[in-house]
Image 1 (cartoon, rainbow, N blue to C red):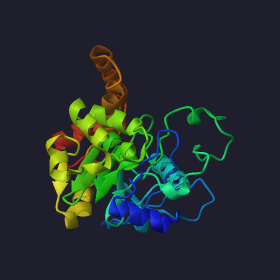
Image 2: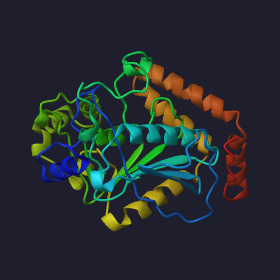
Image 3: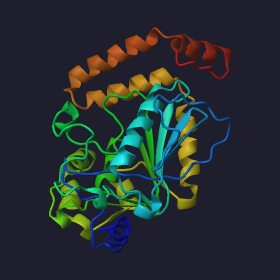
Length: 316
């Protein structure tokens, strides 16, 4: 089955995009460059690659924009695209010029899940190391998901169109998620005979259980529109399609007006606290507060307020 055939079948709905059982997927991605005002910040790369083939990566005004850039394949995730995404996430987290990540897609789809054409006949996860020889192969496959459990910087997701299968991971793990009024959401796994793994489990934590169950069990035969996703709290804003990237940039710039270390500590407190009982989560959050109090930015904030000026944050 060629990539062209797979993409055409997905577009018609004959094949569910991205529907690969947990632990058996192969990813890919795509993206459009988001224009940004201001000078372009340098990015130190820690790998020998000159550039990316299936994503676009750009740093402007302290925003790292990662754009899925396989529009003909509906930004389906291939193994090579997954590797590029991992590198981009690593670069953004390590770059001092980056305070927030913005993830979006190029074309009419945000991400159609796994690239069905690149799944090996064995059904095993594509890996450069022997099967099950490394710890991450025993964990739930993350595919295009940012390392949201271990990274510190916030991730803003701008869903520009079709979003299904592994594409839903960006929605359920993103810190701020907005969507075009053309966006559609669904989980196609059961429609091709596969169990919906981490995608539906994450949906059940982002939506009421019966809503997540309906999405998982209806498969590709029912889609959720952007307005409905907003009403249910899956996304925080619906934006006119042509203004999506502009609005995403506005939100990123607003987040960056705040103290970056305080933003990261707040994000970590919420993210990590979700897996803890309330009392333990409160204690952990206070520990993060105590750490940030010792920073230069914690002193700059009150000074700027008393001087009636904008603070000059340094992430120090």
